[in-house]
Image 1 (cartoon, rainbow, N blue to C red):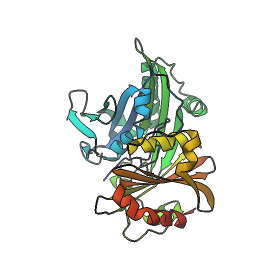
Image 2: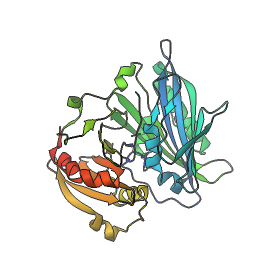
Image 3: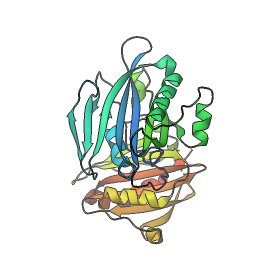
Image 4: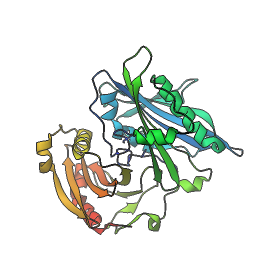
Length: 350
C-alpha cells in the first residue's frame, strides 16, 4: 500500500514539512512571514496506469496565509501519509481533524483541516504524466507555479542549479523514490504576497517498490523494544515503526533532511500539535536535553499535552539532520518513554 507521511516536517518548514511526514519530520527553516502573505503546499504524485509510459500525476495542494500553512505543515504531511495511490483512485484514511468534501470536474476531492484558524483547505487533483518526460514535466509545473506567483520562469538548462542555490528547490532521496521539494515566494496577480511549498514525487511503475523496505536495508542498525513492530513503508520516511497501547498506538517515524534547521521553530511546531503554547529561546533548555545517538551529540525533547504527546530526537549528520519521533496518546507516551530512549541508544548510523 502506497502511503505518504509526516516526515516532511523538515523539508517543509519550508522547504516543505511536514514530503519528506512523517513521517517525517519536516526539518526546515522558515523566515517569519508578514501577516499579508499566503502560502501553498503541493505534492505531485505520478501513479502507474495501463500502457508503457502512461501515468497520472496527482497533486495535493494547500493554499492559505503563510503563517497558517507553515504552522500546519505537519498535519498536512500527516494527511499525505494517509493517502494510498496504488489503485485507480486515491484512498484517503483521513487523520483526526480532517474532513472530506466532494470533488468536481477539476478536483478529485477537497480536504479541510478544521483545527487550523481559519480552516486549511487542501485540493486533490490529477494531470496526465509521461514518465519518459519526467524532467520536463517537473520543470513545466515549477514554471507554472512560478507564473502563478508572478515570478520569472526558470531556464531549461539551469533550473536545478538556480533552484538549489537559492534553496527554492531541494532534491531528496527516500528509499526507492526521488522527491523534489519546492518553496516559492511571490506576488499573485491582483492578490497579496504568496508562498508556495510543493513536492513532486515520481512513483515507480512497479507497485511492489512502494512496499516497506526490509529492515536490513535501512541506513542504520537498531534494536526494537519489546512489542514494537516495523510499520508500512513510505516514500518520505526512512523507516516507520508502531507500538500498541491501551489508549491508542504510538507512531514512530524516522526521517532525514538536508540543512541544519533551528530547534526552536520545530519545538514550537510540535508543541502546537499537542495544544501547548510556544516557548522562547531562553526556555528552550528547559524542554530539551542532550542525548548521544550513534556516538553523535544530539538533542531529545519530551512534549506532553493533555491528550497527545511527542518524543523526539534531532541527530546532526554532516549537512543533514535525522529526526526520530514518536507520537501518540499521553498514556502510551508515558508507558513507552524509556523504551523510546532505549531505541535511540541502540541506533547505529551506517
